[in-house]
Image (cartoon, rainbow, N blue to C red; front, side, top):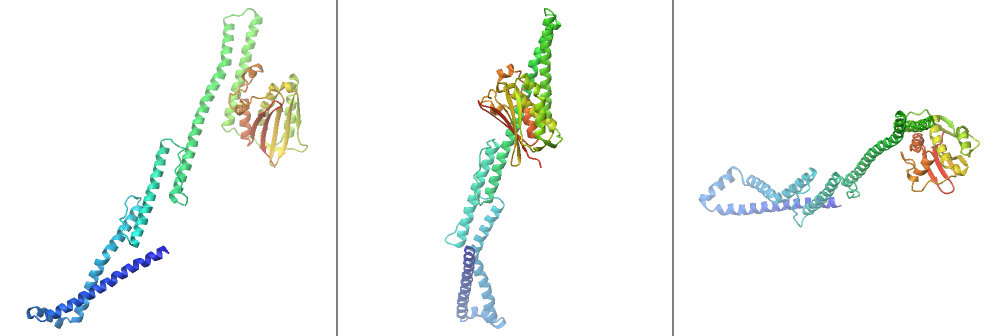
Length: 408
C-alpha cells in the first residue's frame, strides 16, 4: 500500500505541475493578446504585429507561443522535483557502491522527503552495522577469537556476521589443536628421552663397573650383568611400545575380519593361566551362549587386551580373580575387564590413557611397572577399530570397559 500511495502521490505532483503550467501559459497568452490589442493603436508598434497576423496568422502564432510557454513553465516548475529525485537516486547508487555515509537532504513535508528520510535511516543502520562487523574483525585479527559480532536476525549482513563468528570459532579450535599437537610432540620427546635415559644410564653404569673390573667375585659380576640385562629388556620393551604406538597413530593398516569375541577371550584367558597361577588368581569369562561378532584385526586386539588383563593381574592380585564380561546392548558389543584389587586414585582416572602416565608411581616401581605406554596403545587400538574405552574404579572393583559396533 505504501508503494501505491507513493506512486499516486508522485503522479499527483506531476499533474499539479501540468495544471500549473497550463494555467500559467493561458494567463500569459491572455495577457499577450491584451497587450497586442493595446499596441495595435500605435502605428510604429502595430506594424510587426499586423505583419505577423497577415503572413502567419493569429491562431498558429498563439499555438506556437503557447507550446513554448507550456514547456518553459513545465520545465521550471518540475525541475526541483526532478532534481530531488536525482539526488535520492544518486544516494541509492552510492549505497549500491558500498558508500553509506552520504545522506540525502530531507525536504518536508513531501513523500519524496519521506523516502529520503528512509534512505538515510537505512544507510545509517547499514553503516553502523558495518562498523560493528569491522570492529569484530579487528578484534579477531588481534587474536580475540571469543569476540562475537552481534547477529541481527532476518538480515543479510547478520548472516555474514554469523559466518564470521563461526569462522572465528573454527579458527580458534584449529589453533588450539595445533598448539596441543605441538605440546603433545614436545611431551612425547621429553617422555621418551627420560624413559630411554633412565635404563640406559643404569646399563652404562653397571657395564662400566664390569669393564673396570670393579667387582669382588663372579657372583657380584653375574649380579651386575643380571641388572644390566633386566634394564636392557626394559629398554627394548619401551622401544617396542613406542614403535607400536607411533605405528598405530600414523594409520596402521588393519586386516579386518569377523571375530567371535567369546572364542577370542576364552583363548586369551587360557594363555594367561601361567601368569594367573603365579599371582594366585583365576580368570572367568562371562559370555552369551551364541557368538558375539565384531569386525576387527585379531592380532591388534590381542595386544590391546593383553595390556588390560596384564594390568588386572599386576594390580588386582589381592582380589584373587579377574572377570571378563561380554554382552550386547542394541547395536553395540560391550566388554568389561574387572579386577578386585586396589582402586585407581580418583585424581588419576582422567589421565590413565595418556602417554607415559603412571597412575601410582610407587606401586609401579614395586610391581615392575611398565613403560607408561600400555594403556595409550590399548586406547589407540580400540579407537582405530571404531570403538571406545573407559575406566572406572572404586573400593569394590576396577573396570575397563570397551564398546564396539556390532557386526551383522
